[in-house]
Length: 395
Image 1: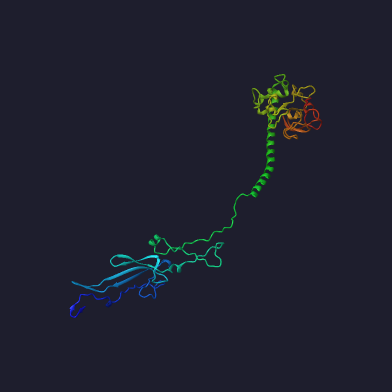
Image 2: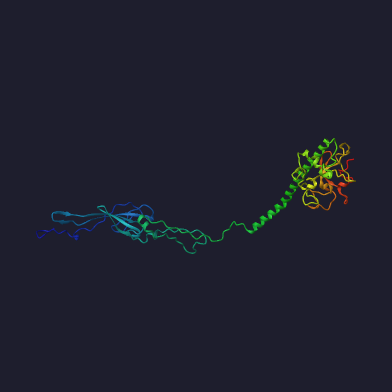
């Protein structure tokens, strides 16, 4: 400007210039658009309501200045800012971190922080609590998110943090367990006792039958060995043991054992002459383990004592009833006792009538029969009365 004809070099004052103006870009219509806030308009943002940000652009012109040797200069400044958009327009929320602006010339600086203190509170969700003891009664429980994000979160992320959900306390009522209790143990014991009561007799019976079958099979082989020896001896049954002093009804084994595949000195290993149920008589071990009885559970019908019926040295042709005349037998038949169906348990006394024992006949058959006892004399000392299908004498 010129004053009193002189050239003035003063710059015009700002009072004579228009105020700074903010250029407002046209924004799409929507819920996030600012209304009624003067010259600052919040743009529409895209995303969740808790994380919306808008762009605010400020454009300002400075008053022209004059200097010697230069023409008038006008300074223009363009500012681009990120501001949160929400229900409280134009306010700054310090919890959302810094708002950045870009100044013409490539410079970037912080211009402020969002101060909308009600932004998160207005957006807090209300989460329903599960039913149970932990639920509040008579009031509406609101679970608020953590509104104090960490420093790293504020620097790295501009969107609002998701709320942290806390669950209601768990049900503290006692839960049923699968422990094995005393009643269960008693039930198991009772079941095992019933099973044992049923199974033990069955197992014992099966074992007894197996032993009885083995004993009968061994007697059958011994009986056949005596018959084979008789054929080799021109039909004469064993009469005298190799050692004359030895009783023939026990030591006949030395004459016939070769016919069952045995040789050498007799021993307890001669299993063909052993009955599994043999319990001995006067000795505490069975006959087939006793050398006094030549390691044999079976005796020969050759007790050649005076007045005792027997077959020692007799010719096969002279025997009248081979199917009823005894040839070999368990020692128990001499008493009589029973090794398989005992009435006295493991004891060998008293003797009793109709004790069941295994016997072999002259005709080669083997049977399990009842033996007669008169209550006084041993069974082998006499033939039975009528009604029994066996005899000791051969004539």
